[in-house]
Amino acid sequence: MNVPHPIPYQGSKRNLASDILRYFPAHVETLHEPFAGSAAISLAAAADERASRFHINDLNKPLIDLWRDIINTPDKLAKEYETLWRAQLDDPKSYYKKIRDDFNLTGKPDCFLYLLARCVKASVRYNANGEFNQSPDNRRRGTAPSTMRQQIFGASYLLKGKTTFSSRNYRDVVLQASTSDLVYMDPPYQGVCGNRDTRYLASVQFCEFVEVLEQLNARKVRYIVSYDGRTGDKVHGVSLPEHLNLTHMELEAGRSSQATLLGRDDATVESLYLSPALSKELLKPKMIYQFTKSEQMCLLEARA
Image (cartoon, rainbow, N blue to C red; front, top):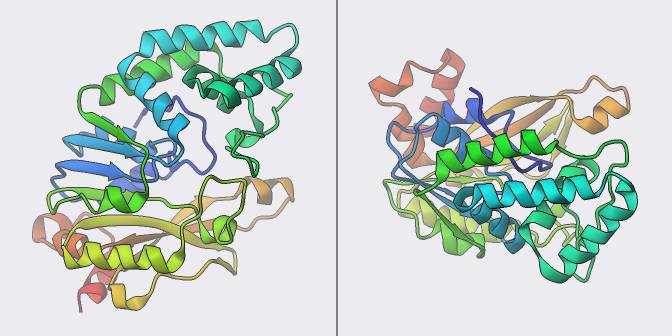
């Protein structure tokens, strides 16, 4: 599936999107992404016509402002990005610092897109004052304007006219979902954000997150959670508690960039949790036979 991805973003689920979409129910009125980031799942779901409408949320307001411009004013944003990209060519390193300073003053979407295209590992980092402080990757100049234009227009084509935006706490977003919707959650993982790491805008407290899932269960809202996992024998974070009655799947994510740099062969496996309401729906005769026998057993065990 050829899906546009205009925003380079560390931790994006673009490479796992097709695997995650396998666990979508037959009908989704609105797909909510409360931790949207690169919105990889919304883009993939739109390309595969798996949802009628989309809600993109992220606590990082400049990111939501960027998404709004990508979807609603693609030509304007593509032109602004090209202007920035071409202006860097004489001295990319100094120009990056200039645009980073401009962004921290103005929050302009075109500046943010340029920074994400140029920064190390496409990784969003902030200092204790809330200022973007990620360094440039001086080995490259960022996505070429022609390629970026294609990605921007592709995303706009998929999502324009059927997407709403917000920059609110994830709790407020997920608790507005109805039983005809699907919530996909990809919160900051415990391994990097459990203790108020200032590189990120906000952490997600484990106990609070569990309470939100309990509320969704009580309302029978369908949801999917990507949450930590393991690399080789090393387990990252604490598993979500058994009393939530979630179906736990594992997705092969390949080798991490860190493992590649260190010459290790350990593969990363990400945890995927399906809500009770979703698991029950996937057990219906028209849905169950798309899964392998081991996946069917996971679904049946969760229902038992």
